[in-house]
Amino acid sequence: MRLAYRKKIALCCFQTFNVFLFSCFHSVICSYEKFCGLVTFLSHVAPHYPDHCPMLPTQLMALLQQHGQILHQDTRVTTLQALLLLRNRGLLEAAVIFPLLFELFELQDKAVRSLAYQHLVSDIRKVRSH
Image (cartoon, rainbow, N blue to C red; front, side, top):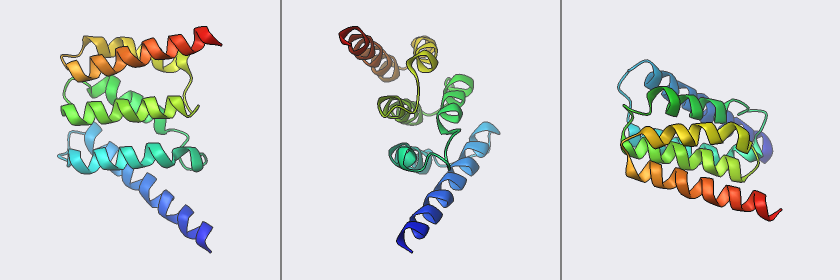
C-alpha cells in the first residue's frame, strides 16, 4: 500500500512538472519559485522512478537551450543543478550534457557559467582518473 501511494505521488509530481514546463514554454506566467522547487524535488527522486520520468533530462535540457536567455536566474541555476545531479546519478551521459554546458558559456549569467565550468573540469578529471 505504501509503495502504491509513493508511486501515485511521484506520478502526480511529474504531471505537475509537465504543466509547469508547458506554461514556461508557452510564455504563460508561472511562479519560478514553485517551478524551481519542483525541479529540485524531481531531480532527487527521478532515479527511483525511472519509468515515470524518462524524458526529464531531455525536457530540462530543452528548457535551458530554448529559453535560457529569458529564464529567471534562479530558474537557470536550479535547472542546471538538476541536470548535473542527474548526470552524477547516471541518468545522463557526458556526451549528451557537454554540448549544453558549452552553450551555457554564452549566457550573461556568471553563476551558470561558473557551475558549468566547475562541472566540466570535475567530470573530465573523473574520466581521466578511470
